[in-house]
Length: 281
Image (cartoon, rainbow, N blue to C red; front, side, top):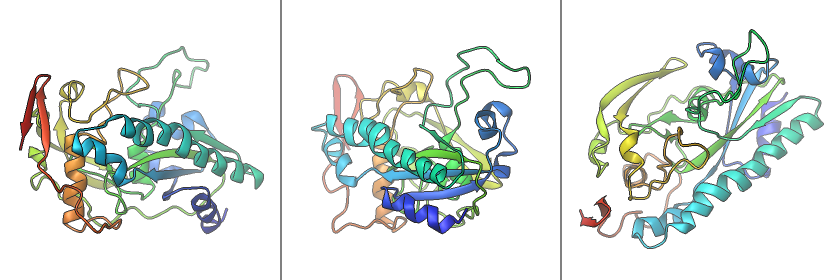
């Protein structure tokens, strides 16, 4: 199927981010993390996303309203706005004769919750790592803080997936560097959850990331939220101090294309190290 045609439609129905990976880019993964475990005939993996508007993070940055992000950046954005875009892309593919499996971004850390129905198949449920898939689809890279970065928005997006048996020209892997890779980022966590660093490789692309103690993130009061789907999933950190700091420094260094008239961080930044302690840095 023509890639430009489907990307054009995807953007018409709200996608800010679009990339395609051929199924062979996932061959290094075990069957319990492979798209073909869900759809054996899959030939292409489409990654689509919508931005978290910078203004959605504003009230968290000011420390005065966390509910706005919980709706427009956390719940509604994923479960309503992107979900509708993902579903319409699936309808578009099926209107053109290709099967399409829309997938919501459920935590890949969730253990199996059922028994095998076939000897050769993994047990349900199989949940894919969407950040991993986004790298394979050329959408972005994993930054030092451990989240997906794109050249358009830095860490400010959420993504979903469509599996299809249509053969679509794959997007090239991202060659440009977005992340500053540790240049000041190691000090972004008020709770000292960054415990050194490690190198990861996805589809041959090497990235240096922090070794993060996510147990500390679960108690973070600086904008992090619990995983809304399962306690085994990583906390949502896209509005946390570390990721807001990442967004700010990437903008200041000109690493993101979504530009603004004023800097994101324009006042003293607040952090909470303990439930009862408020610090100004």
